[in-house]
Amino acid sequence: AGARRPDPSLAARRAAAFGPAIDPLFYASPIEVSHAEGVWLHDTEGRALLDAYNNVPCVGHAHPRVTAAVARQSALVNTHTRYLHPNAIELAERLTATCPPELDTVMLVNSGSEANDLAWRMATMATGNRGGLCTTFAYHGITEAIAALSPEGWFDEPKPAHVETWDPFDAGAFSAAVARLDTPPAAAILDGIVTSDGIAELDPATVRGWVDATRAAGGLWIADEVQSGHGRTGEALWCFERFGVVPDFVTLGKPMGNGHPVAAVITRRAIVEALVGRATLFSTFGGNPVSAAAALAVLDVIEDERVLERVRRTGAALGEALRAVAPADVRGVGLAWGVDLPDARAVRDRMRELGVLVGTTGRDGNTLKIRPPLAFEETHVTQLAEALSRALG
Ligand code: PMP
Image 1 (spheres, rainbow, N blue to C red):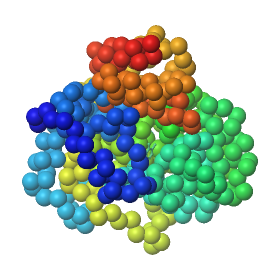
Image 2 (image 1 turned 90 degrees about the horizontal axis):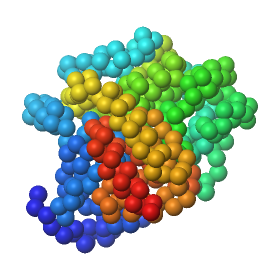
Image 3 (image 1 turned 90 degrees about the vertical axis):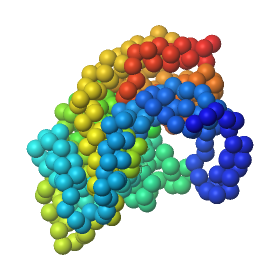
Image 4 (image 1 turned 45 degrees about the horizontal axis):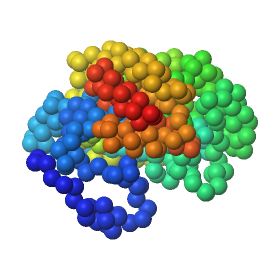
């Protein structure tokens, strides 16, 4: 991959090919990516950028064990899921083994949106209810049913009639949202680190109260672990463990295949039994041998490289460094941090010029979003803090 100038026609061709509804590119001067490894994203100009944004390459970009597993399985067989193959079965067994015994059944799909859509569908069928609860600025996915539970994407559209939202930063907001529902809830859904709302370390007792109130109103609890799972918090593999709750659905995505599309719903057997004879649960690609191999390799690496320990260590250093550098509200847990800054987008763009990639989040885009691959080490924290300090100064 020899260094070259970025292709000046690519952005225009992208706009022409994908049309005006496609999400905008990141950064004032967009990056043309060439290759990556670990926490480094290389652009086509030959520059190594420190990636403090991407949670998909959870165990590090192009992790050799994951790429080898994908290559090996691709060369053997990849096909749909109506044949016996051990990979998907082993993956399901490995996932349930990480969960409380009630969560004993797994469905493999291809994206976080699809996992949440399936959980939502099962919740409506199992409860017979139609109402939904989500946080004020949540994002849970792109399907029609899940877009209704994703206020981040509502833009100027009115709130769907069956959905009420609660502010995760306001402990009393949940019961008020339940009371506002004009139809009983099928489910409440929560990203345990509230990424789109601006990132926070939620109080476990408060979350337990939300779960209890949901169930008291007849609804089920969906723990969306697409952002918060696979060790992101450092305290446990899954964020719901740190809350001390047993969800009715656990949905997994993004980091699950370290960049390979694979996702899952983990739920209780009785919920799935309610669907028998009423709905077919089939996904052509869901749990195919290659995707399952990727997901198994990610679980192996998390264990073998003691990723949770590393996240706890690096995460503590990151929180400390951010608080030392930024005169701001700094919130987070593990390797997910939000820093409130009035000019967060400009700071993000200045940091990109300094070779460090971060994002922005929150209702007004005023929160710097720092969510690196879990391969992040303390030397990277130092480099990030220096760049942030310069970008602020
Ligand atoms: N849930 C959460 C919390 C997410 O952040 C996202 C994606 N950003 C999704 C679900 C949807 O995942 P996907 O884009 O893979 O459909």
